Image 1: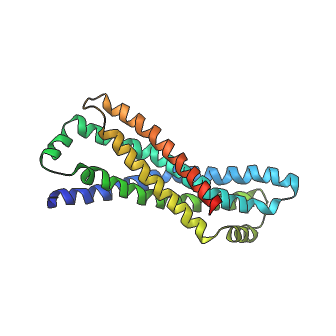
Image 2: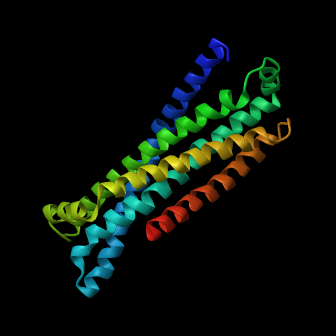
Image 3: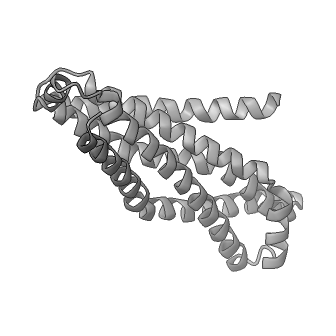
Length: 228
């Protein structure tokens, strides 16, 4: 690959990480806050009936960090970045840019797809960690407002419920989901016909495929946890 093309690929990787991580951060944090508040409120309502108030923090830690966090983060990334990737590549194909690069001997997978796959995998893993941290923080604040439990008890319950392996599992889920979203969105943008109508069709297809991939990753992760 020519040096200029390699430099452009590295630039695309950096832009993808910045676009996905930074631009998606406000909505990720907003959804994480709502998630922490809703989980605390709903679980508290049920736990109070059965005298299980001390389990509220553990439910937030386990459900929010291992399952809800990676899935919701990946869905946000799919809607924000996955569709953008599909639209960008479908536009490049419609304008003949992909044909020109192919005629120059440029590997389209290495030039277009690889930077976006790596960038989205890194960004989604980082956003998953942020989502989980904000969810736990929102749960702590909500527990204090509702006078559910002391901050020290909440933090102790979270510490006891979470293992290092749970955090790594969340990161791994985010990375796998980000990889799948980028790959499927790139495919959706590159396989369509070279017409302007291909752009909206590719974005819709990317969203459908990415959503299916996110739920598939969640199901496989839950199944592996059960059998391992």
